Image (cartoon, rainbow, N blue to C red):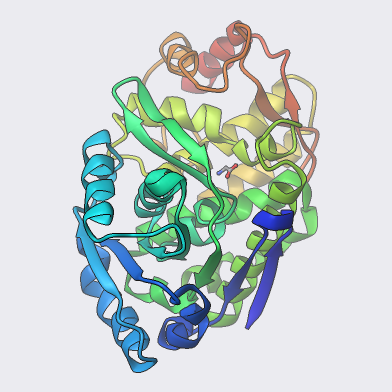
Length: 366
Ligand code: GLY
């Protein structure tokens, strides 16, 4: 078992990564089951993984109470937050009890946010079941719901007590979901770890084919990278955590343009966004065209979109930049962009002109 510590003092916690860990959940979650243990999941994961988790807990004498929510992004809503909070209060949840978020980013975000509010904060454990949740959203304490003004605009930083990652749960996921989650893996190489990007180039095929060693290495490496960044800048105040948004500003515009639908999954938008961020960096003379080409080539090689056309987006620069202008990271009329001086050398640029971005996107469309 690999254990990565998120070093946040009294809010610090371990992330345990092990093939088959779900079957050992009784032992691994026992420290969080002194009070009630309530497992919250969605209807898809309820079929694929919930019985295994409940059985593993039962075998250790832990009676978990399951709550199953509808699957899909719409679950990250005020209405579901209210219902879930009421259900937890009806169950008599106390501060010392733990809720377990068994699922992908939607479940992790909703359950984490609800846990932050119930009794001013009850215990919370993440058991992520998608690659994206395993390498990104379950680690670092960002929790949120969507509102009519946009995605993730209401939320809290609320760290879990523990994260349990079983890479084997990815076996039951559609290949497209795993590939989309892989975009967040390759992101860590592009941010500050050129050697890991090279590893990704050499091993992505094995990883996406389900090779257990490649998968475990990629997850542990990604989680350790994220844990280091979160420990250094938990609340995204020092330009360090913001690096994790590489590809997300361009990607957000693509997702908005495609209606945040299955036409373009979040990870696919991030992949295209990272390729665009590198090509924009090259166009600004910040990084070499060779590096930008290498990023695009890798994403293309594994079947991820590497630009507007591949993402199915026909809109021009003005429309895409208009989507970016609604970004919650907008500060004083400026939007920080994560650009790069090269592979493994990303930085925050707060001086980017949105006119330059629009002109660049128009050239990309041509
Ligand atoms: N997913 C970006 C972050 O956790 O900061």
